[in-house]
Image (cartoon, rainbow over all chains, first blue to last red; front, top):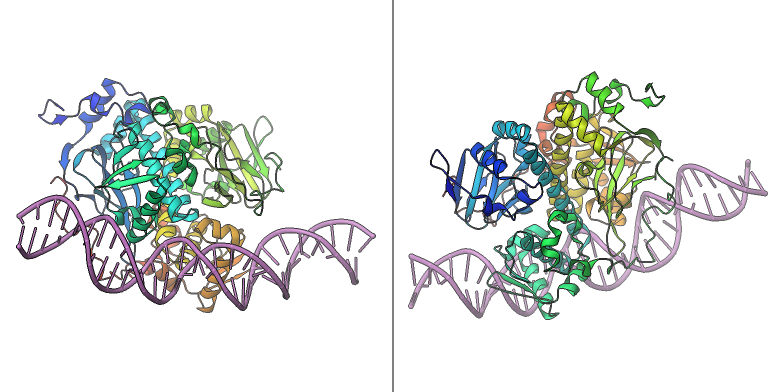
Length: 286
Length: 286
DNA sequence: CGCCAGATTGACACGGCTCAAGCGGTGTGG
DNA sequence: CCACACCGCTTGAGCCGTGTCAATCTGGCG
């Protein structure tokens, strides 16, 4: 971190250079300075802190620089759903670019650092520096894609597949930002929080992780995950990382994780279930 | 529809003036002309047509002018998940603004009309006409919000609540674009497709709809839904329309649907389950 | 040492799935 | 105008994956 002219600590460009925010748009040092100069505040936050509360309003974007955050929704019956995990370089609430009413909350899962960017300054910034606009909107769309995959996972995969897919996703995302250690990484969520992310109960997450362990695919100890059978694990859940929209940094981890191993392995094509719409194989334009 | 100078049929501004695309940004006639002049094609499509296929690539945005479309994902085991329904004024694949690889497909559920906008022209258009940029990105964020609500619904609500919530959402969205008839609307999905949207099987959707009918809340006949007990139905599933991000056109349907009736009714606050993070009630910054 | 959050395990209940049969409406061809 | 086929809706029986509830265990921390 370096000091801004008003005394605030600014992150160095190198601190973010491996994050999605940076790499997706090829931001330069000038963009970096413009972005963080526009921020109201760059602050350290403790684990457990609520950055934003559901059913409040905000005009600030929270850019996560260090640590993990969860976007969550409290349901009417008191249960909880975690709709997204934010890692360094993600924006906790991109939709603040347009909407101020929050139908979700954001909490820190670990201690970390966030930059707070007021919307009115964000608007100016995105107009003045197209690369930043490009990066922000790319983030929004990538998040959309991840959300959609989670939704499909919850709706159509078994508990075992969901957990496996969750772990595969995190390994790839963490590798992309340089926070994985080979096939191992720290996962700072309780089993109940994992369950809230996957539409399961904490108890069932426990049993499911145990079943993956018995298969020799994964071990978890003290919130540290190690994947022993990457190709089996990714094949088990049909993990295909395209939805993460990390193509721009593919090279960086393609050397580390044999991603291609998961491609094309899992098309089981149940004969009993016909293709989506077999009668409409003609080109659009009917 | 009116004819463009190259003979293509262009939609009249009035045909779209009630859609989200238009109202969210207050587009003007000049924006309208610029948008549709930039389109490669405006074409009629039949029900069942696949506009886009999963695992292909495209550089075109499909703007839905008339009819319903579904964004869907085929899973590895042959099952299907419908991740979003597009109604007139929605964009079938906003993420084509950045990404060309499709991890989903888009199919028409009814016959309709789509405008095809190549990305390179979209880029120019969004830069040249900020109101259109504003509208497109608002659509992307609103879609994100809806997706998140679906995801929470699938993960944390019962089948009955999911179906109820689905019907509530559609009534509000259709009312907003003038396609509902009081508390009745046409729902051009098979029960299996509804199940694919909600993470259920078609068979169970059938039983669930039947249970709502027995409660006197809903009737369905020949793909036409009538909601008889709006306040009970919306309270049953905790429906709160904020996530639809329709605030700019709230007035239009607040007169028709007593939306406020659903607010605050369903906070059951299970005593057995404490608040998300009771220990962290301090303001961010800790 | 005592406390507490989280992980683990067991017993049991139940919601939603599977498989299967029958029904009804609609379109098509004779 | 009828016969037939097809697709989607409806209903039943039985199963199984996941939830619920509760007890116990573990490790970290004051």
